Length: 275
Image 1 (spheres, rainbow, N blue to C red):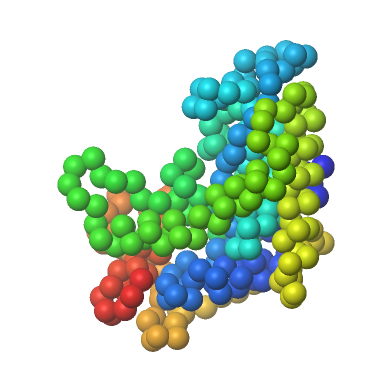
Image 2: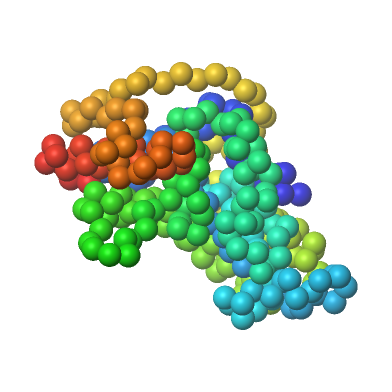
């Protein structure tokens, strides 16, 4: 049933529409630093009673929340609609481990999405070529100013995923108490509620930008090596040199992408522009 909500990673036209919606709502005021964002990944615990018929019921106990539940992984667009959901992991599973096991991570790991697009997440996830996460605070010393601004911009984009889950729980009161059913049924309830959640948002949009259900067609999309924003800042798609970035290795594509957007923040700072 979760296949009814799938991020259209093979459809460049749909990805372009999602990215443009993010740009209009969150990016234009920040100089389009995070141009190419197509979703915000986050995890959520769908509370439930202890399973009676599952062979390993204790695996659904989330020690962080002191409750039983189903670990849900979802990607949200700029309008707080769910464009991807995977609700098959027990509550004891960490967000990063859950995402690594879901079909979307497998597809993205194969490079099926155009590399100019990416999703963003919090520090519970790891850097990937197609995922942007915040910089961690150093153990010693102050955090550089460009890293602080990078994290602030990332947080501004990412708050839409938290708002989407809050709207889901507030709208469908069934989630305000633990569900008394088996995990597979809980997963179906979650997906059904997200589909209805998307429908409610779509009906309030006079000109819906896209549908989360799309026919997949793969097309090669090229992008320029340099981009010029409306306020005259020239962004380069080349990563910073190792001595500039602070990273010892250039083999981790996820850190290279993070480094690129950090460099864009520094470019705007040097140009005296707001970020």
